[in-house]
Image (cartoon, rainbow, N blue to C red; front, side, top):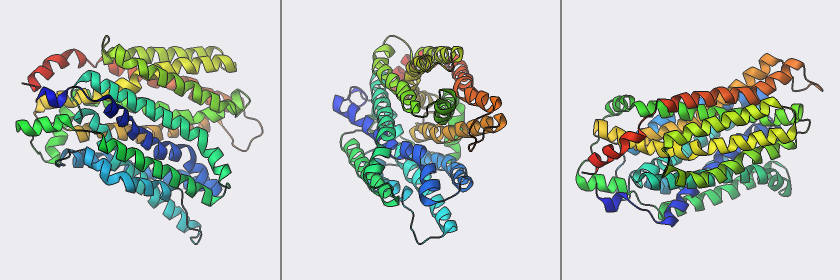
Length: 449
């Protein structure tokens, strides 16, 4: 590989790389936060039907990530292997957001349910996956410099969490301004879709896949059948560790649906949910800015370990005073700073895992390796929501009750405070057995010969 192909990147390219995750959240966060409400209160589907639509769609999500990862790995183009997919999906991505929040009036209840299922699977398991697996892969194909990957991952985190915060802040006021009816949701989706297309096109025009170009020039590129690619992937122990790490992280994110319950029933005011959400995301964004500089002094693995410890300490602060709003906010802020290292370094480590896989098996599998990220994001968050529902059900939570039983209140605390600690401990344990960082310098020297 030539150094000119794998080294420094323009600052503008690293910034526009973050645009992709902002576009991602215009679909992912909007759907995650509002699609159930849209299905039940706007379209008129029952909660049971809406829940089943989202649950069964996860099956297609898992399959589509693997398929798209394979497609990316087998793609060849003068413009790269991952980057061209950003261009191809830019307009379909906008249409997918519109379809998510559109429901024809002439359909009956069954027809609306079928339409909702088809459009959700098409949008999330189809278009979203076909855009975001290549996007995540570009973290590895754009540069092999670990510092540059760290900065790219920081931009990804900043724009991602910034986009999520923006979506949660403006959707409801925007729907109100637009009239609050079904048409208002479609117009909102069209505006988000247009913005996403602009962001994705800017990303495409201002990016370059240097690592892939260097491999092609050296004549090392080799296409393998899927069965062999999967065998090589399973041999990559660090990929397996990071799958577990990311999965635990996104299960924790899925548990975030408990915030509205905690604000309402434990803190006594549902409006405090917004403050809790902001108290988490702002520290993540601030912490993400510091992570690249820290990665020059501290290994990514050790940063993730420190982050897990800080996160656990924040949860313990909340556990000590679970009904004190100000202490809860303080604990959430601490948790936010604890999540920042993993949010940045975790994705940068996937790029390192690709390099290790190339060194060990002599083939690069960016698509399959990074498909773990979108798989963990979608399926992990879904499992987190499922865990939340099971625990609330065991506790005897009743949505229609004017007051909740002691068991129901305890179940809310378990999901908000204690379940996240379990997954933070799991993340910590996985990082303790991850020792790739100290091996990377020699691996990269051999790869660049």
